[in-house]
Length: 322
Ligand code: SAH
Ligand code: AVI
Image (cartoon, rainbow, N blue to C red):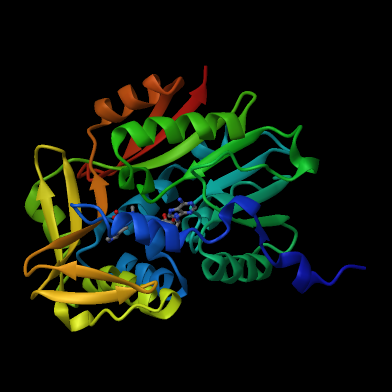
């Protein structure tokens, strides 16, 4: 018999060989310095993100969880017996548990995330709470077509992409990603996707500038990660967290701003910062329901049902293949 611990260790996709170094060399040598936000999520970053989800200012997680609680039966009704649930950027899989309680006859739950530590922790917890569930964690970047385990190829697949992680991509990238998901979930796939809604920018700005400074730590952890993994010499006190709403683009932007002129070394290279110069670390786009449905259409998905909270802070969409 196979060792159950070994069985629960996530698969690692070959394409997910660590590309942090090349992204840093590329992003920090540009005239407008930038780093892809998927690199927030090392073990420390995943822990900090979980802390963010519990902050009073960060409304998305608890609002989306309440929407899922209220409509889980409807969300689950399109999953046939023997179907597979595939989650992209599953993190702690806490919201997934709400759906799983309505899916006793699922063939398997495939969780995909770049954060190996988050996947391991979630897989362990799910094994305790859903002992008969077949959990298949995969460490990898969901931007590329993930090859699902061969034995699940014939099963109907429902994708789950909560958290408004889609908002961390530009609309053009989001359209491309939705097409990739369509391929992974085909034929006849279905997708349940969480999307943060447009609202008073003051509420948005507070959600990304919490009083306890956890979002600042999450942002600055990117510098700490370069120090840990790439021989960086970043002084975290010499950079400042910034989160602003860009009304033209309809997005929150996170930046790390240099407090002074300074030289930093990373990967054996010298990187110059002027006082006030910024590294753009994240976008978080906010959509109207109609805007998001139009985006889904452009990626060849058909929008079906959409669920929101009474204050219309957050939306969860059902998309089907056309
Ligand atoms: N779905 C969870 C977590 C959202 S946080 C929730 O709704 O609360 C975003 C998650 O996506 C993190 O766990 C992060 O590690 C993962 N992630 C971000 N970019 C990714 C990528 N390109 N490929 C795979 N996982 C990614
Ligand atoms: C995962 N993602 C949707 C979060 C967001 O709100 O854009 C990440 C985050 N960044 C700062 N706080 C939370």
